Length: 283
Image 1 (cartoon, rainbow, N blue to C red):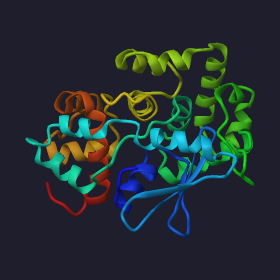
Image 2 (cartoon, rainbow, N blue to C red; image 1 turned 90 degrees about the vertical axis):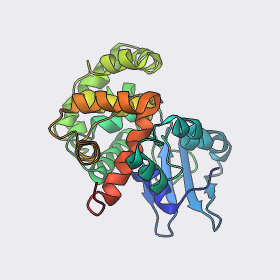
Image 3 (tube, rainbow, N blue to C red; image 1 turned 45 degrees about the horizontal axis):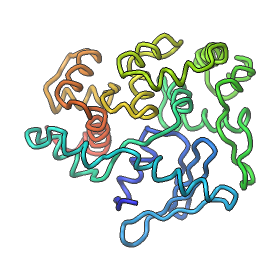
Image 4 (cartoon, rainbow, N blue to C red; image 1 turned 90 degrees about the horizontal axis):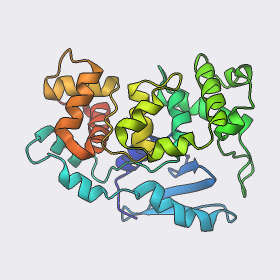
């Protein structure tokens, strides 16, 4: 696996793309996705080492490289306009090796339906409760659970979902689960659709606006042209690209036009840089 810095690894697994990674006291990372459980740690050479429960090890061995490094990031980075965009070049240098995870589409949708007006730590609490209370136990572990599938969520009441600290999001998740359960194949068709069509389909779901749809498509469907716009990106684009007073829709359009086919990868570098250095580095 590619060498990463500790900061880039932390940004990759715990920077808002996924919500089921925890840093352990020994500085390893414990991660769960689908039916997989893995621990990651960096060795002295900057490489990644992993371990998994014996019952899951063979599956994890195959799935982990695709989950962490399933994109041709080197080619994508080379295609970005960093040669003429000095701020983008600065971001790429600060988080060298950062990429986009290849997560299960349905899980990504669930995670970002939990994200409205919440910080990462709060989203992780909701997701952990949904897994613990509504997901099946994972083989080879004592207390870890996978996330519930959408058909499984459809059997839970809105009251049960609210007990997972979802608040108003429980209604969105309950309604979405009912819709997906009643329309087999809808998720798969949406994931496979071209970007614009997939985004339009997602935005018919309750609670899914443009930003959530772009996050789901970028982190869950591998559509690197998606350019999610949140408060960090609004700040970054205003400070670094003079897009003051632009609407999120205008910023997203600029991002896709300026950064091109791999705009979503550029977005992740801009996002990471602004969170880490936005208050200390002037434009």
